[in-house]
Length: 401
Image (cartoon, rainbow, N blue to C red; front, side, top):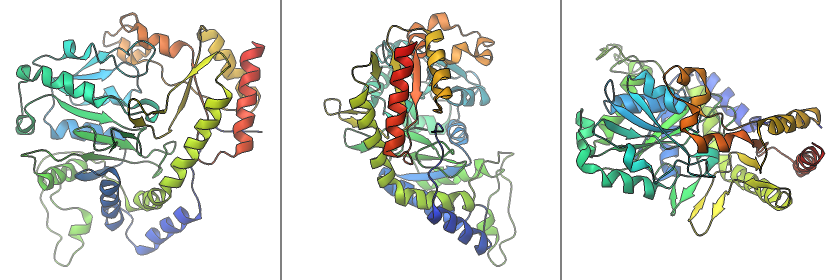
């Protein structure tokens, strides 16, 4: 067998909807994008949603809307993909990295309060693998340090505390404490990249909760300005009779979602419950078959902690093994036709962040998570035969080395 790591689950319905968008004569931001935003808001049980061309753009434009900039600090996990931190650099702020808790991919919540100071404006938790962070613990830290908060913009003044912006690139469809991902943090950024549970090929969105004093319509307009050069009218508004005239209110950015992308997203969202159900079934297979193999697996469901994940990634730790052993397993899996991956190489191990002065030695728990982690294929298009082939191949690889 040849089993890729994470191909998109695209069917004829998505293809037909894209064809309909192409035939409509409207392919950039338009009615389908607006409809997709509304459907996402309903799905997440949030207040409002703005779509972008990527999750990274959504994160960055939220920081910009909040007035985060030079001299500010944003707390971000060391154990994540670069996008979570690079957006902080883009706005001129300083990423303040936090280590994982021991034996966890999530941040060390016990250490979070000590990193919050008068320069801290935002915390970016990351829902690795689709498991929602413990936002109760995060808000507990935020409110414990509320007196230190010094707002530097009108938006920050509305909140009067450090703002929580979730990097939920993995967690659309996840829940914690009966709340959907999208209604857990102040702001939540999703990814619809080709490898994600729900894809628009490329794309992302930011959704937010209701907050006293926050004008949802004004914030939405700000996001639209930020994503389209600061232009006071989008193409749909300009297309109306006599509506050509516009203004540029500021020299902003270009990161809007197109209706072609939204067409895929609308169908994907309709199919999403079934796709999530299939992912959870595959997780059940993995959990059952790998429990006696000398590995530990990411927990995707906990009745005690009241969360269920989106089943985006299946992370496995090879207990008491090192990088060399893990890499041999990856190579042997590839030789057997199964593509695997690693999530993640901690940020302080990467050249960009080493050049900024970060050292992996300061993040020992992140390194311990990374050094023997391997991610198995997990996507809704996997057949039972393919799942059990992956399991059998994995067992042979870890037993033969």
